[in-house]
Length: 387
Image 1 (cartoon, rainbow, N blue to C red):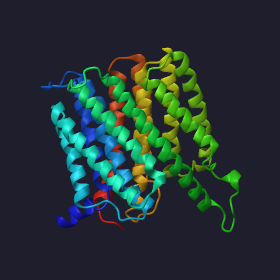
Image 2: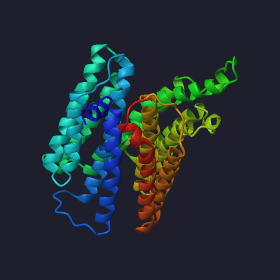
Image 3: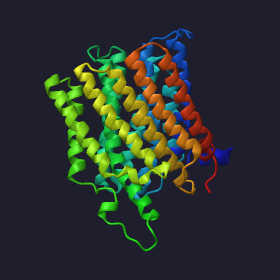
Image 4: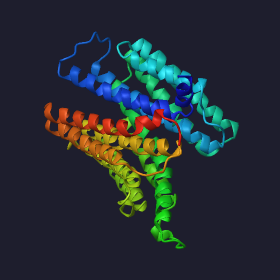
């Protein structure tokens, strides 16, 4: 048992990706039962707010903690955050999820989770003055602020807080984080893979590799920040809609520069591009929702299921393989997981458009199937010894 516990808390990706998958599958089952009236709980909070908040904190915050605390060892050339500091962070995360019926206990546990996470990240970055990644810490601080703002509103400590608007702000903070980190890892992993596929002795020129980070990326990220500000601040549609369309074009241009069509023979690479494509689609749907053409929930689930969850699965799979000494290669269960997630996103968008419970249940079934495929393949790797 001691060997197992030491292994589990040797890298942050191990406990957090494991627990994130377990929680998100069980939470969707609970939400379906509540939605259909099959499960009545003594809620002291609105069930819809629990669903929206805890899918963010349950899967997304766990994945962020797992990824950042694992990657930061590479960024700083320091030992990975492990042992008791990691275990304490995990305990606070678990406490927040188990306190689902109590807003007070949930708020306290989440506050401690964000505090410990930000302190750990700050300690690692400041110890070597890793200024390039200070922006990641800034985004974590903003995520923690939006989460505490949500809890304060839910507890009526700040009665003027718009809970839905705050949840949207938290969602967009995650999207910005994907823009920053995904914008590094997707072209890097793609370029590395393309070099390995090149004939021996051949050198790929710029036309055969993803575009290097430059003005296009800065322009796309800048437009995203402006669009997010217009959404959160609820600026007039005459401002937000043009910004949204410009942001969509810039992000699509950025994605195309990474040359996804060259990676179609390797799912472990193209699934990251597919995840980012859902982000681009989500921006378009959100812009269309501002015109009244589509419901806002269609955009929300394109971003949460299609973009964020797919990116979590894509990056989580690479982290699990790479940090346990395994070959970076795909598996049919991982490929199935990514495809099922995209189908789940489409079904949930159909629910928003058509209404009723049929497509909602289809989306939930596809979601559960996707995470089950991932779990069957990667849980043994997450809890097992390195190769």
